[in-house]
Length: 425
Image (cartoon, rainbow, N blue to C red; front, side, top):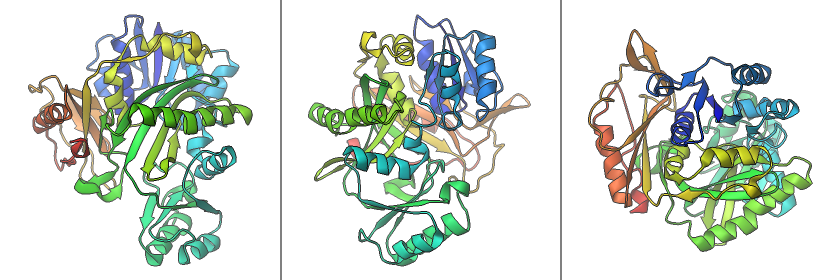
């Protein structure tokens, strides 16, 4: 089987790495890929592509004669790449642009959940600055108040405002200063839920659904959950909070109703579904959806997967998931630490030389995100640069192995959280 993986981050590197383990996969093409995939994975190729140009992606898949395309990031899904592939009769793992609104529009997602009885926080929507400032001045849900940009903001469009002043500042930055561009044209206000967060992943073909593995992400930039939100500074899997009874409840109350509701609304959901949950005293409630694998969660979930991954993906793309073999898990624990450029998630510099990747790191995995090759050197080229993943029979063993490997790597102004996985201990 020849597979095309779309994207250039650590999530896509993890997808390529996992597909490389599958005996049914003959070759993988990554577009556009990254140096970790291209230069350090023999037999795998990277090809340039603009991810917001779905017609070019269809042409690439035709030219390469791929059997299956797997979408990593949300951008091509929002641009309608899955719509183009399905119109051309080509298998793809990823939802249509209409179904992708579960992620690309938080107001759509909240209205959908309200309509279909999916448990989530109480909310209000404002499409003008005046209306938003009025809500910010007198929160209908008490304090703190969660304020979210409606559209895609790279995981950074969320503010938890402690009072009226902070809420007003968040509204002005999003709707007047346009800090998040068009994504902040509409604002969603939410009741602040209390409890631990868990990320849950599922794979659907529009009718049937397979629950994958759980994980816990670390969104804040600094230790002890301080600092601004980021795209994710690390994760571990599986979550000890996601017990078998909790899994049954989430399937019955959340995932099954979402898949059934999307189908009933005329937008069958096909592809990976990420459900960000808050485990409240009243039960699990949805914080947000992503319409693809999470990052950095993919880097700790995919290595735990055992079995014919590619065949299951192809079955989901062909709407035959019911006939696919079971997905199994290897029973190990995985902990991933993101190494970021100084200043991330704010302004940061690139071009710093990366050293230590060839050092002894035990059996830790390293997935590239923001890296580039320049004059024969590997340098930083993004905010999140690498994800270093440790594995072991216990959380302690996985965490220790990850941080041992981290200690071997360096680049100018590198920063990372020192407490990834602490909550599991």
